[in-house]
Length: 318
Length: 216
Image 1 (cartoon, chains in turn green, red):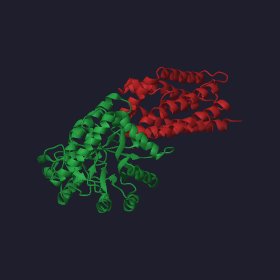
Image 2 (cartoon, helix red, strand yellow; image 1 turned 120 degrees about the vertical axis):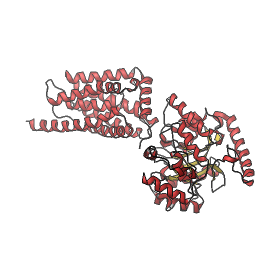
Image 3 (tube, one colour; image 1 turned 180 degrees about the horizontal axis):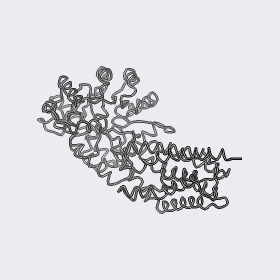
């Protein structure tokens, strides 16, 4: 992540320097068998490698669909800044947004100017061009809104005009305007086309929906991502709020701690993170306490295949 | 799936009303004048009403959809184009062709039309107040799309003879779209839109059918 020099040059240079330092430290720590993070060695944050480079990012990120689209309302913006602050305090990295999300990118930029600890930001947004807009202009606008000169990850949103946009993203990556490129879909749509893109294009990341009840991705997309060395971002981990609403009044099973879960959000996230092909899940929230619950999934064990099956059976029995 | 919540929508409406004050009062006054012209018809009043409605639809397109709502909803510019289309239709059909006319006299359609227009003017804001909503975020005819659509449908019902039905298409489409949004993100004020929209469509169809049979 680089802060835009025209807005906060000092911070841009500091961020770049810190990244360089962290990269060096990370390499040294990895060589020593230690996963870098904010927590102590006894409570290591779950960081997962991006297959194309080996760079590790926290396995729980933050989505911004609806939640950060608060317009100009300053009180709501301050609330979201508190959520983002908690995210960084708990070791979060990836913040994912899109021009499609209304004022979300503007609000993220506003919040980034007001929170501390954002040096760990892994900035991820998308190119999504409705009628009359061009991709490069839209991506420049995203950089302006976030206050960044480069994005860590730029994705083609919902595969819209993906051939045209991927060509641009490859150029942007070669010229250093983005570090990684990818494509996204959601709600289980267009998986066949997504699979074709994954097979044919040199993607760093792919993003799609996967959760304890929507497991279509297990059949082909997740194995293909592992096979092709593509990092996986999981959206809609709670089916927006539906899964939380479904389980929140039900008892958490006694054995949830075996999966590293102390509450329902962590139970649902740990199920996702238990899949070895998953790199990062991106739940969204407007509440600081919910963010704390989400980020708790960065700690503790992840469930193995047997335990994941048990988790499915339990949720499906509710 | 909509990219915003009812809370954020109310906040954006409140800011819109605040930022453009005293235009909300002027717009509501203009719409009240249009209703009064329909209730007490004057020569050429139909054209004046058409021009006032066209101005309202054009302003809602630009001020609300393009400049304000687009900030939180990527679909707003598309809505705005439909609102501009409605403004153009009003100018063409009601102002240029003079196809929107009002005449003295009372019948059921006229009463229903005036009642619908009065609801758009006064009922909409009162409903927000009754529901305990933010009074700064009241939807005003001439500023917000919902009451502007209902007021237009009401004035079409209050018109004499056959109402130009093509002027009802965009308002009815808005009633459907805004009603669906209201259902999905829980905006109680806008839940009335599809109900009144269906009622207005039925009454307009019946009114035009009777006018057709009554024609010499």
